[in-house]
Image (cartoon, rainbow, N blue to C red; front, side, top):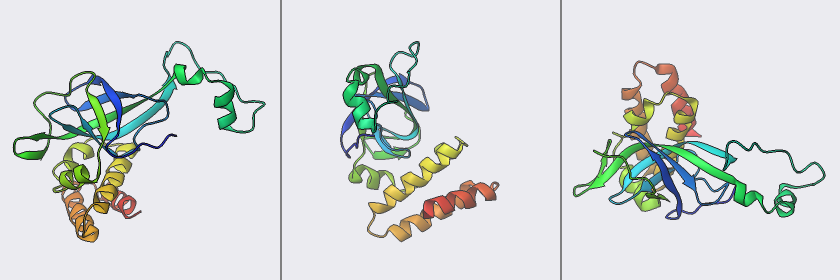
Length: 197
């Protein structure tokens, strides 16, 4: 996996719906990590990465093993330079907020991002601004999958790292989770454990 940097433009939107976007990365194996906050288009729409797929660019051409006689994956890619042209990385992100004249709002924008909108990995400033309240949690909690719960935990830990009082932030997050998941105590406990690391 190739490391992506905060603020880096890394993909473009290839499918867009009211609650979700699909994006294709410019380079294979260069996705933002699960739970990353991404900024899409202008004015910005914010989304959280829920799923990452590494796959053939052409789904009708399945991959075949190529490294039986090689020692490392680096050797495999060096011996098969064409792989960069036939592989891709795509990801799905749930829309959780947008920016308007009043600032960043949690919730769904009136329109989803345009196709080919640029996708950037959010930096600490975006994370800190976005993590100011927990209204966006409701949108992610509706996803109800192990991947979405891990994404929530990862995002909360990343946002906490941008705060001067990360403990206070995480306590607030725990209270918000307790309210949203009052009818699902097992899920709430599991999520709180995951946020705690």
